[in-house]
Image (cartoon, rainbow, N blue to C red; front, side, top):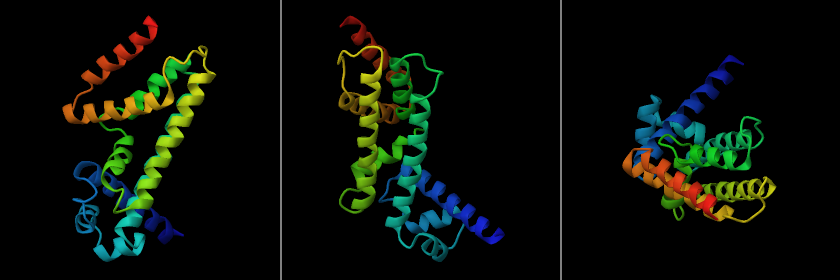
Length: 187
């Protein structure tokens, strides 16, 4: 039992290392050699755990998807937020942040479609799931007027995350969000 737990812990460490490297260096630049070196394991052990770089990428995306879904659902079902608008703001901020879990999934959409199609599909599936949750949140809220739609919100999240990452600052994100919500009040 101890050996199994130790192996699981090491696999998780490799996944977390790979996520960090894929996020900062990209899927093509962060190779198996670098991941093994940074995780402080032999390359053969990495292949023993995951069998291929493709499978490791799939595990990383599945891990991030799981954490993101849990976070989104905790916002949606939390009594901490009083309105659907507050919940929507929290979901946007969760995704459009400097250390966002969503960063890896968005990067996957841009970088791996042709090389790692299964991992790409997993990232796209998350966006589809998120769009569905946002749609439900918008139309289950206190206001049923379609002031904005779920596609627009997901695209806003993507754009804000790209802006945050390129400027390495949250200031512009916050300005855009205020304008977005201000526009809603004017309608």
